[in-house]
Length: 184
View 1 (spheres, one colour):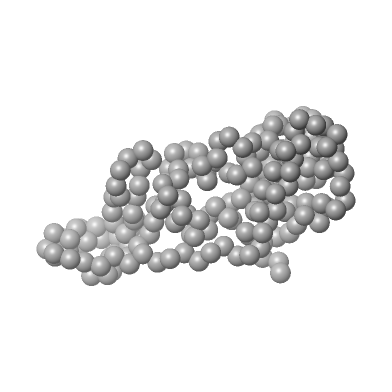
View 2 (cartoon, helix red, strand yellow; view 1 turned 180 degrees about the vertical axis):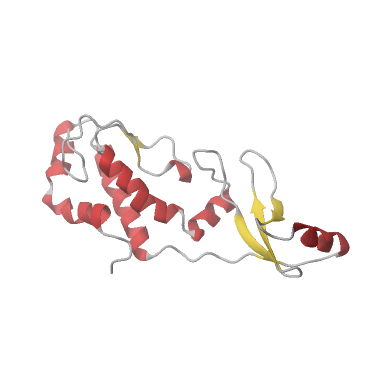
């Protein structure tokens, strides 16, 4: 068995590869160990998925839709209480209704709380996150695309070998595996 990304022997690999990351709610669509070698799995997790998942835009979507990470945490949203110039966090807990609002770390929580208690109204500003760069998104989509193709061929080792050997897919493999996000 060879890795669909680097084409090296991956028969001793132990990691399953989530086609869509668990942090986006996927637990079902996975590739068994060996389809993606451990080295590529680690690289893709760190250099392809992480920049996509860590973008404020995707974190806001996860917050809005209540999508927890594999550790069952929904990322908080950051905002700003206008009247006290206080950084605030909006929190959701997986499986619970509603949203909690608290002062952000290293802020004067008492000033914020006193303002809330003494005012009938206030303003929270919730900045909208910038979308991830085209390169971050395209590398993520390329990774998903190649893995979906491999997933469809899981029952036929000959087709899986053909996917690995297909030179027409080499540019995609190289783009996903080797291009650094900061390069143009």
